[in-house]
Length: 208
Image (tube, rainbow, N blue to C red; front, side):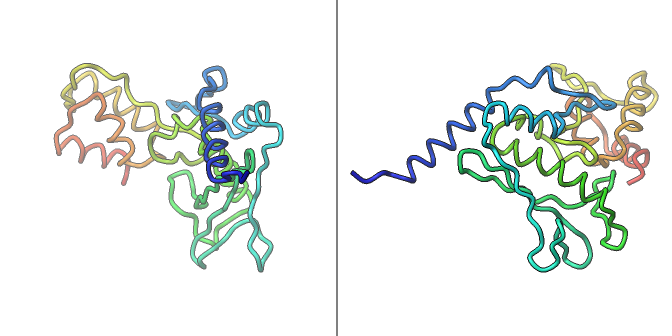
């Protein structure tokens, strides 16, 4: 009797995802500033605990042998995580702390190494572990992370420059400048109602 390999593969994928996405990561989450994140090391440890045969594959350029790829201007890494013969591959640009691609002429081995770690965490998340943390933009300098938004309320608070909330907001902006104005405004909009003038003021504070 022939084996339905497609059905088996889909079943395996669903089983891995179901298992990993159900794992509680609360005691593994770390904090940096206003950010919660799951480090690549913790993600890898949890993955190997449940799937000891899981493997990581760091792809190297066919001709140069280097562990990154380039278009001549910027660079990116390619990392695959294999679980039960299912591989998820993540492609991640080598970025600075502002989430901007680093010019190839300024690229360092440390930049590449950090990107490989972040890419490892993302590839693991694609299998289900810690995926919920990737609800916003990719966060540079961290692994599997997402900005923590202000506490949600039932009604949006009108944000005014001279209000008591403005001091809290300016502090939040200062601590999260590396993520850029788009991410910051998106997070603040979960609690505050902002006029075009206020958004412009936030843009000026971020320095975008």
